[in-house]
Length: 132
Image (spheres, helix red, strand yellow):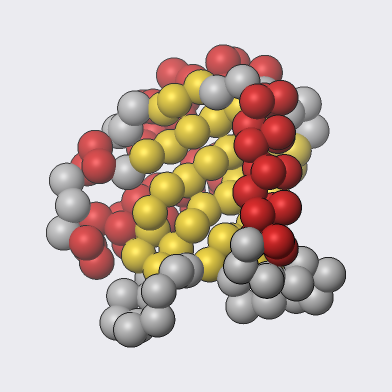
């Protein structure tokens, strides 16, 4: 699985992680949005999961360590900025939470209206995984 980008919302009790992946040998366009959540008292598990994603991305794409794009929102984006940057060895972009929420809602609306993706049923494009 090729990892294109990682986005994370770090709050007081949960860290929510979304990453976009493509199948490396697929001829089909597009990919999958993957959703994972971590309790904040297990932040090390979250960091380890992100390290593994980064290693897969570097191995499959032959990319350099800094090529992965990591974005974070919420108060934790500031509180854990140095921790994320050090643990992953990449630049972490801190984004405004409300702006990202609005843009995400717009994306979901476009998926339904422009591309006919029915978001009321689980599709192969959306995948939720519980790491525990």
